[in-house]
Length: 540
Image (cartoon, rainbow, N blue to C red; front, side, top):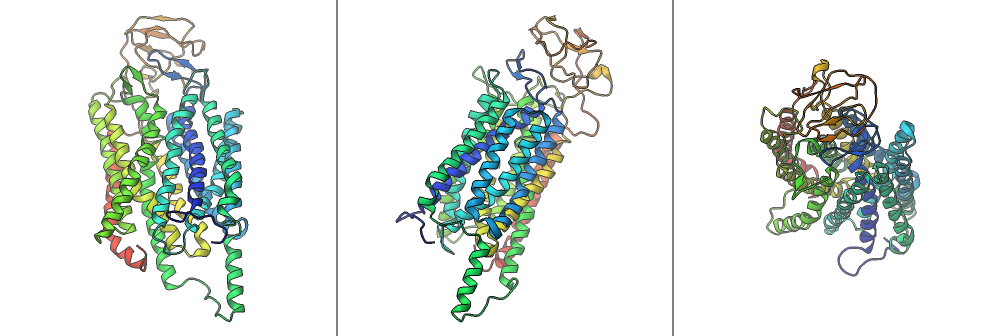
């Protein structure tokens, strides 16, 4: 730990530098994520304001189930690449070089999305973000763990502070990136630009202050450090370490694997936030507060706001319980976290019930805003029990020579969860055209220029020339000119039928299944937590 500037009391100064760098990186990621799903699902026409005052258009024009699947795969590979990036850092690059390299690649990915270079540019931007995150994500967390000596009781608290940096960036990002993205004077591409600027600020911070505060920490690959230590021990006449893993190391690795498996259930539910919960909030939650319509992307700030608000509460709770000998073990805390997430989905079930069974997919029938807010509250409490505890657990249970690699294994649970969650989100019913043309209904109708419609009139699509033709009713005044496609005729005063496509499930069933499966997995983990604690061999 030579050359690391430390505070005489409390935590090392390096923690606060890494806090700041991670804050800007998470600002970049969550700012992009807040608008990405909306951008993909928005109609591929110039932005316009509809009769309800909402921004429409300006996107890629993908169906929402396709957007959810793409979002799931993207978020999955964002958390698969840390497995590779962690191994490369351990063996060849070192953590510090990997963090800088990853930040540069992610910044370029955001700028590629801003450039709007068509489908190819869109794919290139997402690919760069996945690759860059693989280098950045596991290695900055490993550096945080290496700020502390082995068995230092401050480590869990240090990761809680670091986790607040993650969520401070995630808190402000949707407001800034969402403001630009969901603004007709700018557009979604400027949301991506703001995200790229955030990553640039993080890189500048590390470049200016890294050497002065961190010294050489993280510059030398872990494998090289281990070889040097083994050589020094051999020169001193000490016995060479045994090859392979000891019994204790094997048990601890088994615990990591089991907790990674159960964490998959958590992240599959938690990361419904940018897809199914985001779309549900947009379409079926009454976002009108005091006469102002809250942009959908702003709801993505509820979770990080609550993290910052509640992090010290949970940190103090663990200390209070520890003094009384009642502090739950790491597996127990994670089981509690998964269970709380499942309970949160019960509030989404409540939102579906609040709209009434007759509402179906009609976006004109809204649920109260408190349902989704309380869902995010429970999800956040679950996250505080699982995520920072999991990061700390990896640095405590992993063999030192494999810490970055095992951090990548931890993020593997998020990879698997997003594959599963993105696929499942594609099964939720959304209003879209049915096989019968007389029932084709959803959000925006392609019409002839300046067609006049009286307030309260309901429109009915009779002839569909384009599978993306959609409808919202009622309109008031002049319908925005979305397309002048010939043959898109409409008729006034007809009844609109909202049809769930075949193979889809309603929102009540969808959120109910998430609640049941996730709560069951959390309770099962709680049931085996004592056995897992014994396998950790003294590490709490």
